[in-house]
Image 1 (spheres, rainbow, N blue to C red):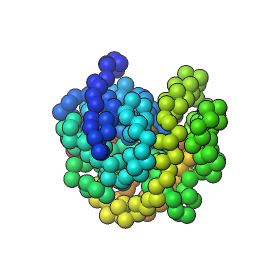
Image 2 (tube, rainbow, N blue to C red):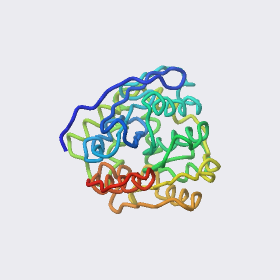
Image 3 (cartoon, rainbow, N blue to C red):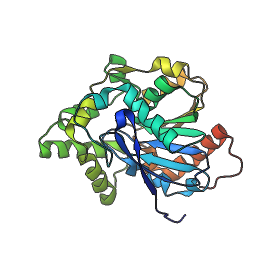
Image 4 (cartoon, rainbow, N blue to C red):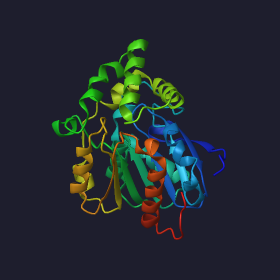
Length: 288
């Protein structure tokens, strides 16, 4: 499809923090709200926003608090408050008047989705797509679901030494995919990773979370997408969600790492379109 310009806006999220939002697609269509991961940005979803998904869905992505073009206050509570993370999603849904919203969250986006469910419930949603998603933190069970090489990079993520930080972030980008990214994608990713201050990254991982109870009572449709070569959030995490939510649907990708929507966007977009169509009751074919 044509690369139409994305509509831009600022939304006042939790505690009034300004969030940068981009969107495309029919404004009255069911919404797909994309939530990126730790130290990333909305840009990771451009293979979805600039696709034929925009013919049938309102596609919305944003920079998490502390990331990209969203505000980056230094105070710790901006990154540890479950209520404020949840309020970010609620504010986007309310202020943009999204309807039949399907949340699509990768990696840290799983925590954010669970924050929202904990504080706002399911009423304004039609479905959820976990993509290499994490939901536990600061517990032995959570540690068992996270790749050891990823955890080994934490000191670099939190360092104020520019060289140390850049080296750790470069290694993170390489860990995220099974197939090596081309130079253009690698350096673009390195750029938006470096735009996140170390204090944001450190505070984001100072939380202690266990969302099993939240997921166990989930009645919404849930699609669990996971690369079988994911070295960031291990596939055992996806298996855990499928046990917690018996009606959840698995979608595993062979020879794929942490970011199946980048490594195999055509398949990902088709699966998301089918899932969203069933979840929202959208009729008619969606050709991706």
